[in-house]
Length: 148
Image (cartoon, rainbow, N blue to C red; front, side, top):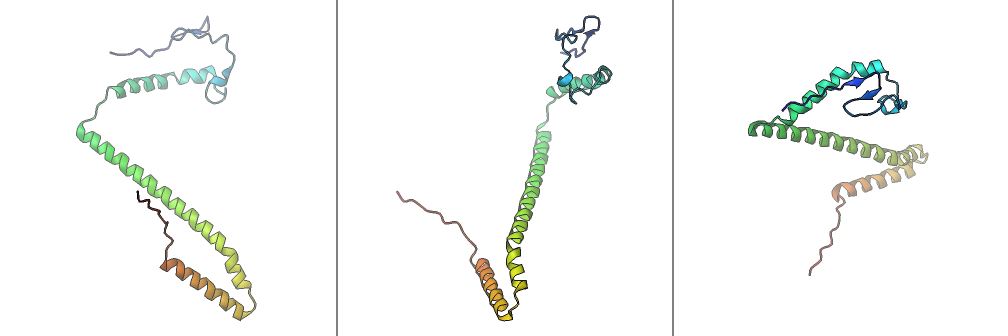
């Protein structure tokens, strides 16, 4: 069953016969994409493309994949999804690293601006010990278990 997607416009009356909409009454061109910047000539030039789009929609709805094709399409979707998730994770990690560096920047500046070498050494040792504690004992979430 083929659908006729042709749109016929009665130019003398200003009505679209397929929808019955009276275009001569509506001077509001804001409904046209582009905020009303499209002219009648532009819209008419888009007519063949719209026919192609409607034709493709008709063809796609009847299209069926074989099991093998469906499996390959699912695998491709899965691969794209995983790569997107990896990229998003990398971006989040990079942003977290930048935030961490911004937090530590004042501490490092304080250490570098310290004039007393003994005090600077103590601050360095304190920072080193703190870093070592973090590395040896990574923070773990505590999970409370209810026994009923």
